[in-house]
Amino acid sequence: MNKWLKGCVVAMLLWGASACQPTSDAPLPTLANLEAISTERAPTATATSARATLPPTFTPTATFTPEPTEPPTATFTLTPRANSSIYYIYNDDAIVAVTNDGERSELVFTFGVGRRIAQLTPSPDGKLLAFVGAADGVTSEVYVMNRDGTYLQQISCLGFADVRDPQWLGDGVLLAWYAAPTLTAAGAIYTASFVGSNLCPTANNQRAVLTFSTPLYSGFTFNRLADTLYYSEGDDLMAYDLADDTVRVAAFTRSFGANSRPQARPNADELVFMSFRRTDTGITTTARLLADTTRGASPQPIALGVLDGLQGVTYSLDGEVMLLRYPNALFWRNNRTGNLIELVSDLTQTPEAAVSPNGAQAVYSLTNAAGIMQLFVVDTTTRRPRQLTRNTEGTIASPVWLDGGW
Image (cartoon, rainbow, N blue to C red; front, side, top):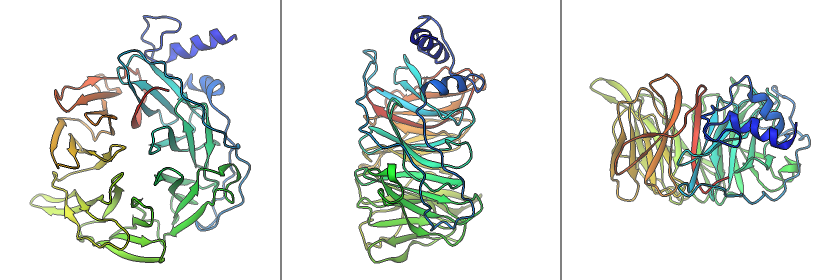
């Protein structure tokens, strides 16, 4: 099949691409035809063998991973109206990019049909994307790719079944994640350098920085300078000082449920976490704030001043804006002024969402009237959602909104 014909086949599978039929409204690939695309587009990643019986603190000798090269410079071929791109995980096994005006959409990476991809996480400069992937279809590792999917580097080399929550530390030199040998085993927080990952674990210094005693993990984050690790293991929010190797309670539980899912605000010395509280109608979740996360600080947690029932928060890359996700609504918050705006209401599910690069818009996932999950865009001025994607089937997860194209 010549290159022109291959391009036509791929273009007809994605909505908005018009290489073969300019007026067509082609859907994204289904599970039936995604494998054909993946064999042509996906970079080859070296799979690691499962070692489910290893304790979480043991770092096995790595199999060979591709030697990292300088990520290629992205080619910007956007229409005049488009100046940014939204990435998302499609059907749990592919990464798709779409321009903010919806005029162009493309599958940029997949390991293959049924090979899990989860938790897209942009680097601080927005040039790279970290994610959890199962290249061999069994074990999971942390990977990093560039914006158009032509560069891929495996970062971790554990061979574990349970890998979650990849995060970039500081200026993006280090990555951190949670991993456990099995889904029911106690795990650990690992860190590794992006540089040297082709010789993991020695050259990139992969190591367990904190080991859990139970499998009751419920989130972690580092402070801005990455010298203090905040985490939850079932009850209180804890702070681990990496230099002193000491642990203290950062926020006691209210005995209604665990303090969980801490998230540090980018470019600031504060974090938010989920907390349970009692109301007249029962127990619900809310958000509390630690206003000083510098090393050794012990501020009293304060209420964030938002509605009860909160399911999660999402920060903008610069930390200026926060999205608050509820089962039936999405709120926008200015983190400097505390100004709170309800962007959309009457939702049928808790949306996954991301902030636009300028902070004035949000993209969120929602099942439309036809019963198909789509992405919608809403701004803080009109608050009138517009549908961005036109998928004919499939699921959407982990939206990320970045400047420029791919």
